[in-house]
Image (cartoon, rainbow over all chains, first blue to last red; front, side, top):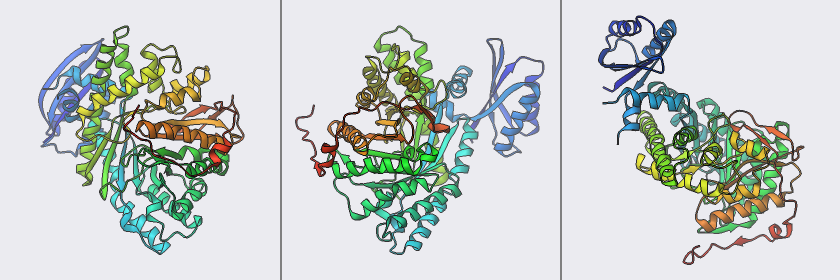
Length: 90
Length: 454
């Protein structure tokens, strides 16, 4: 199963990670790695997740995470890992 | 393991620097649709296109969503219609009915353009070829999504000057037939020399006879990404400049390769080529002209422009070739006027003339592209420009093309709006001296001898 990269970018507030992780846990998506930095004052998180056991179809999950982002005031994107490995690894 | 900085770099390229996959083009052979009955031919063509391309648009959207990369256009190219419809089409009206079938198939599959209303007449014209060519003005003015191209020469065959003369007239007639729409028909008509069989970019796309039954070709684009990379190395020497363009082109092309493979697997259609191109759009920050200016030119058109473009083209190819297993098409930098804000600005400030553009086409990926000229330009002058451009292609073994729009009712100083990705263009000055006697000679210019290549 392809890994999915979730990126969360936006103004820092309390509970961003909690809310994203809660959503993922509720939908049976396993988080394999998280890294987070503050870039130019912005909260910047990347998660590597496995959607193999996800209870939702991929497109629905993408849309719901986007909506969740709108609620918290951050931008949440899901992308298959391939676009990054292809671009940055020979 | 991928790290956060790489992820951010990719997403910044997509969001701020307008990296996109410009087109997924599904090439479909129509050779097996040949029929002597016009209705049967039209039905077979419609059925085959809609059957094979049924999932093209949904699959394109799926890939966009899963990888977060915009795929701007989904398109279809078909076997040159002159090769398919000859038996059934007895008149130009018959050909127009095929164009309408193609238009309907394009609309029903949801693609924005379908290319292949074409004839290949580089050495000579059959009566069928000529009928198709003469039907182009009516076909382009009565359809919305059909694109047409005519190949009038090649390095191996020379230039068919009868076809060059005819195409000058056809370009004018197409302009007249669509004058209510700013002569938009001409934006869908390309005259080629050395046309490649596997070009995914409109308006010149067609599915060549050397191709398989169906094939997926992808055109990538990222002028904004290259420009941004160059902003980071201002003042550095050419070695650093070339290395930077090359590395960036590699990354851009890898995305195209990924999309091509995914589309091919999901559609069950073999992957053909990735066209390594920098294709601009009228959006600010998505301009090839701006890359050239970032290299140190005050304006595109200034001395040094041709060298800058040559360098850019070569490095794009060098970076791209390693990124994809199969490359083809036109591969290089496009230099259209109306579709590139930097080029439009250069024309408006008087820095860029058609003559300088012609020089630039010696080293760009295609040729004179989307240039608005005065509506009263004689057909023979248009033929003359086509002949010049074809000669550059023929002698230098490269693809060249002409897509001129003589805008009926407009003159130098006016601006014409085409809308959407086609953008807008200032009407440019054309040399007023005639070439009538030259064009009216007719016949062929022989193929060049290449043991004495220069």
